[in-house]
Structures are given as structure tokens and as C-alpha cells.
Image (cartoon, rainbow, N blue to C red; front, side):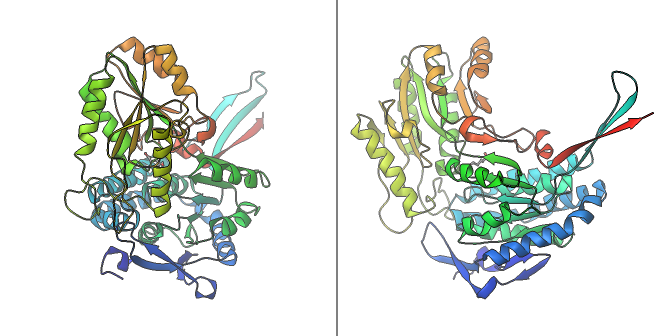
Length: 483
Ligand SMILES: O=CCCCC(=O)O
């Protein structure tokens, strides 16, 4: 075990404001994907531990809901400030357990902490409505109340921000919660729990359980009538199962699932800007993001120029341990992830795609893959339908606007689409035509705490962040007042 940020994290379960071992003292190892070394061993929760966490959340709900909004707001504001102060510590933790380069991890701390600041501001703006019924006989009053105890399942790719994006609005709305981070990256969430405890959030409001048996531990909680909401960020397949389980208690559900983002470069685009956007849309987080550009559609007349410039930039990237200076591409999360990327690449080349740069994993310790650009990717290649989740970009060409929109929409997913054009009318037309929850015009990133993040179709439902984010944690109650 190394003397790093990882060794400073409390590794027990956080239940009812106390740190405790898992039943039977079971633990699970957390690995560094760059070195394959064990970073820490954390508590491995059982079904009984999960139930204890939900009991704590249920017991704390009524009092937490009564807390003054200003108090909840101040706690969130303090949490934002502490996270900002401890940015280096949280960034190091994320680089160690997830692999992203340190500079990107610092960027995630800024992004993630902003959800606390945003929802600190929203906590005091929850309001209802007063109106007169059309017949004039009664008054209609609506009020917003917290949904109740929430279950949160967060992913490994953004260990902090995907937590704060759920925890922030839940705290602001007056909900208690049980958070289960991914087994690959539990340390960031455990450190966050300590910070939330420090800012005065009462015992039982936030509970964190880490486990190697996510399905086994969470399913009974999802089926427990004390839970009122489930929010999940992860794959579409897992999301479908969770929605089915949620049907039993008819939980409120938010699902932030997979993507298959199109990235379209029109013939009138500023090509250098498009290349810059492509680098961000593809390579942010080593390509391990649901928002990652997955299918590049480039107008035939600019395809050669775009592909050449894009491939040059990709080839300039430095692959290595995210803790090292100058590294811009860290490891993928597991050996299985590397094998998955390789499979999609082999499938594409076997169907005629050409490798312009990269195309191979890196030999030795760690789960590295070289930044890769492919051209001539056929529409029936697996990577045109499945999330690549790695540093591989496949380019196809097009000639007609309607045709490219149809191809961009021809997927079960609908999270985010990107396109580059300098034609204002086209910008409006294409934004309206893309069947996606989010659209980036002349930009390769859409994520912003002040904007509603979320998808349509198999990318899920519900919105996180923006004014919409807090609504996911509020119920509307209507009171009819007779005169
Ligand atoms: O994999 C999806 C995580 C979304 C990260 C973001 O907010 O951009």
C-alpha cells in the first residue's frame, strides 16, 4: 500500500453518522489501473449492511425535511468551499483509483464542487403556487416537498461529479440518501462522506455503502417500501434491470445511461475548431464517458483535412500514469475494458476501416490503449452501434444534411449530439432535428452544472443539474381550499 491520498481515506461504511466495518469484517480491494497495485481495502457491505443504511436514511428523513432551507444551503456552500480547498487531495484520489490524468481530475473537482454551489443556491428557491380555480369557488395551493429517502448508484468514470450531481440536489431538497459508489472507485465517495459530515449534515442524512455485490445489496433496497427514489448513472443494460426492480414500489426514477454520440462536421465548419472540439468530445476522460463522441460524420469535401489534423493531434497525446507530468491519456479502468475496445476496433478493421493512427494497447503494466483514429468505418461496424468507452475515433463521411441527420438519429441512444457549422440557420435546423437530450453546437462539451444534463430513448430519463435538477427530488402537493 502506498503513502498516497488513498491511505488517508476512511475505508469503513458510513451509516447513521458512524464509520463501521462491514458485516463479518469483509473487505474489497481497490486497484490503481495504471500500476495494477492495490491502493486500499474498503468495507465490502452485505445485504444486512445495506438494510442498515436505508434504516438510517429513513429514520433521519422527517427531521432533515424540516431543516430550514437556509441551513441546508449553508451546509452545501461549506461543502463546496471545503472541496475547493481540498482539490489536490480529491484529484489525486481520482487519478489513483480511476486513472484520469491529474489535470483532468482537478477539472472534475471544479466541475463536481460546482454542483454543491449551484444547489446551495437552489435550496432557498424552492417554491409553490397559489391560484384561483376557474369557477372561483376554491383556491388551489401547490407546495413542493422532498421525495424522501433516495438510493443513489454512481459510476466509476466520474467518481466525484456523478456523486455531487445527485447528492447536491437531494440535500438541497431535504432528502436523505444511501449512496453506493462503483466498486472500482469507492475512495472518492468515502472521502466525500467525511467532508459532508464535517460541514454539519446530520447523522443518517447521507449514508455510503461500498460493496462488491452491487446487485445483491441494492435490489432489496430498491424493493423496500421505505425507499422513495432511485437515481442511477451507468450502462443502459443495468439501468433497464433497475427500472424493472423499481416498478415494484413504483419509485421515482432518474436514469442517466449510455450514449452513442454523433459528432458531425459540415462542409462550412471551421475545421480547426472542429478538430479542437473533436479532441474534447472524444478524449475527455480517456474516452470513458457517456458523452464521448462515438461516431464521427464528416462531410466528404472536408474529410481528408479533418481526418489528417485530428489524427495528428491524437498522435501527439502522451499515454501514461495520470500522476506523471505531461501525461494526457491515462489507463482504461480494467483489462476487460482494453479487451472490449480492441474487439470493437478489430471488428471495424475486418469490415474495411483503416487505422490512421494508434490501434494497439500498450504492453506492460496498466490498462493502456493508444489514441486511435480510423477512417472508412462502415455503418454496420459494431462501433457505430455500441459505446466504445475508450480512446478510439471512427470516421464516416456524408454528403447530404438530411441523410446525416437520419444516420445520427439511427441509434437506440439519445444522450448528446455535437455538430460544427458556421451557418446559423443550419445550427437551428440541426439542433431541432437531432433526437438527443443535449446538443453541442461548435463545442465538444456540453456538461455544465447550470444546465439540465440527461438523455432520451435508451439514454434514460430525468435531468441532473440546472433548474430541473432539484425537481427530481421534489414532489408537488396540491391543497384545495374551499372558501
Ligand atoms: O458517463 C457519463 C458521465 C457524464 C459526465 C458529464 O457530466 O459530462
